Length: 480
Ligand SMILES: Cc1cc2nc3c(=O)[nH]c(=O)nc-3n(C[C@H](O)[C@H](O)[C@H](O)COP(=O)(O)O)c2cc1C
Image 1 (cartoon, rainbow, N blue to C red):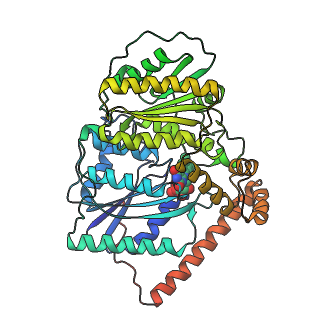
Image 2 (image 1 turned 120 degrees about the horizontal axis):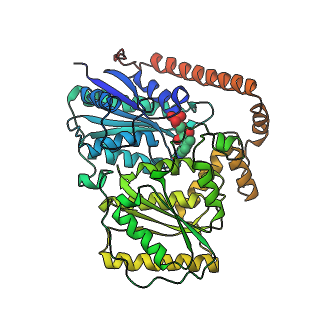
Image 3 (image 1 turned 180 degrees about the horizontal axis):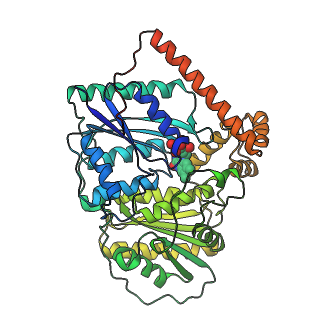
């Protein structure tokens, strides 16, 4: 009997999306009927408890399906924030998809792809799905298509085969993760406040520390206590940004912040002003409220937008720390995530704190120590070696720009200035490509030609596969 597979497509890059192209390739091998649902075009609201028609329509498609395939480009160590709007609603409104299977097709630059897919497996299982597997492919940002790697094509066929067999046999894979209390996943749940004792430290410092929190403090007792501690124990001036009250929309994935070199985001909202402020201050603190296995959507949207700074870590010389609240056992991952993202901007992250792991008094004492350490780090210019994850991501970007034609200009400058090209790169042809990209007409022609070449090579390999006894699937796209 034919079953249904729904691809939930969450890339803001529309038709140019590499993950969409990859998932479309996979569908050729499905024996079951399938449909694509565009989560970004559904324009879901950020309110986790709101159940508008667009959201209910997606839920209806998910409920009618036997398998769900999350299809997305890696977006700052998780899914694009628009997909998190969906996850937030599913968790907050108590949905459960037990008896169905889930899989993922992700394209990325291979910076922490394993961590991201592991988180997607985790949230899938918390929603009740049995997680069957995933495809991790390299997605080329400029050509809107995956690199012509046979490995990607093979992994698509393998995953399609696993989905086919599971649906035909009614097999649901066992969970990898035990179930976590729903509260910790729901964006409506907040950590508790705690006592902040002791007299305020006199403001003798001349530095400024910018504290960035996603949720509104008036609605978040834990984050309010954390901010109160920073205000009380720091010698320096404290500025607080509550992102929920600022207009910072989702990243569009146009890559122009990298490509144009000046790093300016094309989305006209309050992000650029906040970015500028980050460059004017001395210290930066991120406080994330846990939601959907990551941090709240207001902070996530902001962090997605800092992707350009991550490529050209222009916040070198700043110090900071991160805190995760409201997620119980999920805070460890959220804190690791925040530490990685802050570190990638160039800011030295001196600590990643987790509220729920300790009793209130110990956490308050540790927080106080960290605030005092941050003051010291700023005064004494502490030298701290890069952690492996920060270093590794920097090196991954170096490899990426060497192979994608050094077209990410911001990266190119940073890596050249820091003498990080320590092996022969394909710089010559790429210098020419960069020149061609200055002309819009040539750029369009180049993209179209490249896409045709990649598609042609793929079709040839497919013909060979079929000649050698391989088969296409019997599944058909369900008409809209
Ligand atoms: C804002 C932003 C964040 C990104 N974050 C990551 C990341 O954390 N890890 C990674 O490997 N690639 C990252 N990338 C690269 C994209 O995941 C990659 O180009 C992907 O193929 C895009 O897929 P899509 O075309 O389907 O959107 C990011 C790209 C953008 C624009």
